[in-house]
Amino acid sequence: MAATGYGDWDMHAGQGDVGGGWMVDHLTELSSALAAFSTDLGATMGDVTLITLTEFGRRIEENGSGGTDHGFGQSVFLMGGGVRGGQVHGTWPGLAPQDLVDGDLDATTDYRNLLAEVLEKRCGAGSSEVAGHLPRHLERPPQRRAAARVGLLRKALAEHPLEDEDVRHGRAAHDRVHA
Image 1: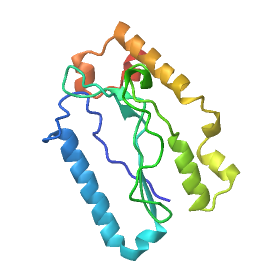
Image 2 (image 1 turned 90 degrees about the vertical axis):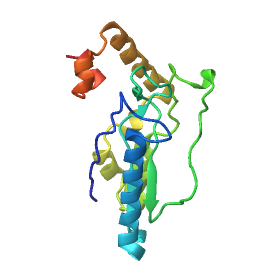
Image 3 (image 1 turned 180 degrees about the horizontal axis):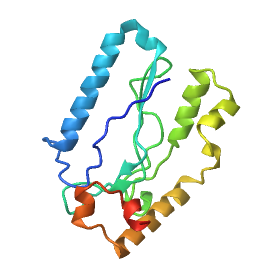
């Protein structure tokens, strides 16, 4: 098992649009890197399961700085051996106001369930090993209750807004609220 990071996705300002910009540039670079990795591995890619994920999603609505703030729902991409590819899995919650949680896309799948399945099916890990790598993964409350905690954070931010300096220096919202 190996892990790596590809940072600079915290696009609170200047994200761009479908015609180009920071997000398009990052997605293009990421997709090119993943394609090159798969090409380089060739048939050996069947022995590898690659997972890309983030610890948070983005808000649906653009903020006043041409970016998006932290949100709840997120995407997880998998490729390689053991993956039924070429399709979208999961449940799409919808974008209608009644489908959103405090204006956020509702998460329908806990990413830790995906990681647990890969650890079990691809790495042969037992349930106690999975629990050691993903502590409290089965204790997570229902998605909407977890999303409500994000709403509490947003309320705290409304009372203690981030300063321009916080955004420029990449300070996370929770760092500002809990400082």
